Image (cartoon, rainbow, N blue to C red; front, side):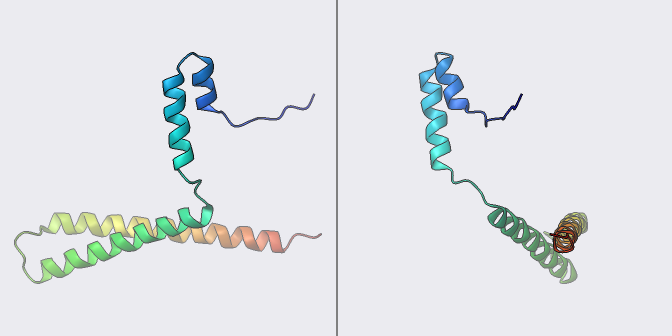
Length: 108
């Protein structure tokens, strides 16, 4: 017996359940949203990491200049967020490189 899983269509399920207004709203939202590719998701994640690093750097500069509106705690939290984001990005990169290496070493 060959079973193939189909993606769940929430709009179709809502229409079958007798909720046409919900089905129309869901269908409009899914048509408006473009499916995200891996490249765009990865690019977005890297931009987010870069932005957090820039924010942490700016806060460090403000603390060094003695700006009273920037607290040391706020700066340290921003630095830790940036560091964790960077470490996560490095781990994803390492896994991608390892997967590429594994695929290239496969015998055909």
